[in-house]
Length: 289
Figure (cartoon, rainbow, N blue to C red):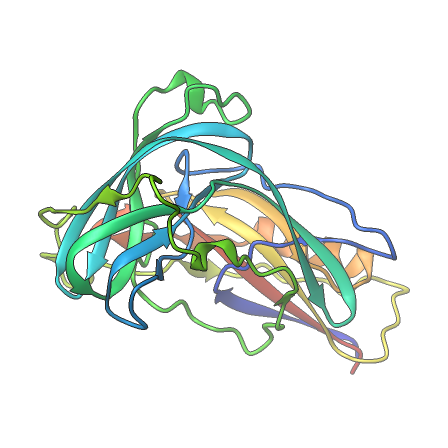
């Protein structure tokens, strides 16, 4: 008997599916902040460091200025990011022999120095402006105050049907030291950016009711396949975007998984004791047995 299994939310992998021998691009249709943080990389120490690099990225071209909150093992720090341009970058990914592309707009490496060697635990954009951005309307909003994403600092739940996606174009420029005269921001101590005075200050979003995924008529597969649907959930628990990002190679199965995600009901996650937005992968497995 052919069956479809609905899965829990899993860690986000921002990828764009490509079928066949040529790569095709697509991009997500929702953002919760004018920019988000790429990984912090220690430059003068393996774990604890005073000098770090990082980057900002988004889903369309823009100039961004931002204030960043950084959680460390020595307390919270703020970092002011001067106006910087986000340029197009294509990342190449692979899933079980199928090629993918991720379209992202990212900054050149940005640098920050802390007053002493420490370990960065996590970071998020506190506020940002993107005066020339038009696709998402950030240019009309001025300086926008952002929330920490739902489940900030937590490990997101892994799905038993999650499939490994390999990045064959890992970014390497974040490991280089700043050139002579290149700007290095100075991190400053700050008070925590929100309250943790509640039973569960940080929670990932969850599925309240998973809609059934129907196995499409006439589709025959020799083995079980998984589909990952990228979903964005608002602070009110509303599904604001759903796109297939980890495809099965069968369009009918991808469409069935997307339909299930769109018909499901979600509960928003939490950050600093407040409902917060989040982006996840919603996995569905289709089995021929």
